[in-house]
Length: 257
Image (tube, rainbow, N blue to C red; front, side, top):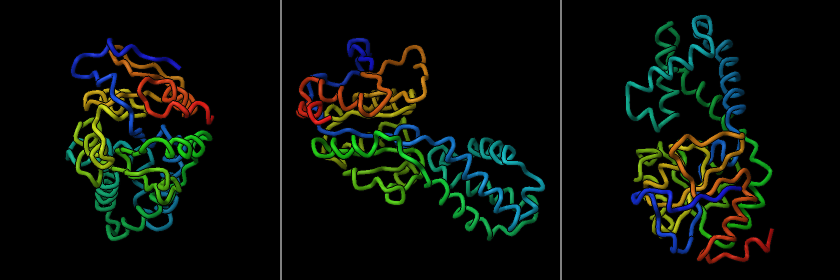
């Protein structure tokens, strides 16, 4: 675990170091569960479904072709940057139309993908640490994805959850961080954001006035010029850091580990 000197942050990025932490906000994908294998499996199941129910699509497009199509389509509409369900739906509609398949089948195709996308396996530290933290601070989540925490079985841990697709903008826009703080009735200076993405999560949170903890589960390296307030490889390390942080108000966390 690596702590970052707050003095290294610019004035616009530096929250009040003396503010008591009252809330911890979490990113979801690759923070609470690994997402790459989930998406790979979901896309394969969708492709298998297409081969049975819309065969003209897989005859024309490989899985990689469909990914490239989404990438190109995402540049056509700013909404697609934060509403990934809408992006996938629009891309499938475009693919179906281009080969003469019934676009009316797209909703059923998306159901296949969405169900598989929610078949995530949280990291082993998630349930126990969230259970303990919830007893001491307010917990929230902010995500650019469309994961449903009720379906995944983690909703009970969070006092508030905001998803970009329903909010209307996504990280790193300060508005979504501020909305999460408002939902928990705390100021940005009283909140810590925990996430894996250096730009969306670390820089985004800091620019919104929150403290940022980078969760590095995959031995990555922060880009030059980005300084998180702390770097943790597990939520157990996060829990220890929270317990040791001055003016936290939950100093007994480390005694409950």
